[in-house]
Length: 178
Image (cartoon, rainbow, N blue to C red):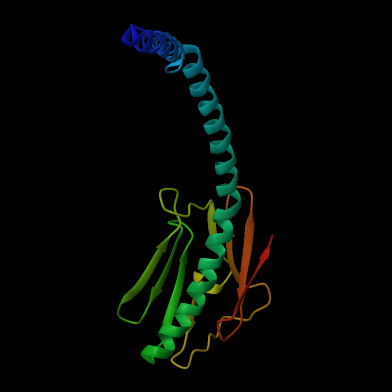
């Protein structure tokens, strides 16, 4: 009789635990995963957020491309002077407004080419210069004869922004928004 008393409460306890365990399993089955409606809502929200981000990014590019391109043009002026001093010969920075390219040339070699066309990293609308011959040449001593003339420079134009890069005879450049 003693064994029955010990076992009965133990068995009753097992039954109660199994009921709780089965109840937990049923609850977890009904809550497992996401419904189709929830998944569609998440996908729609991701699409809307991606569309907003893409429009903001394109606006950012329209503002920053001419800014970055104008800084590159200025650095190419400085680089042209450096090449002239290093090589101890005249070096020319040529602007091609048709192909939208900058080219650094020595007397016998093309040293660098930077494209700004529509298929390149920094697509510009226009790249113009008001310097005679569309180029500036630094002598072996690093002096530019065509530079430093008031208003002479290279104009970098994007979709909504335009910068004028001016420079002095020693290749120091400055850019202004037009």
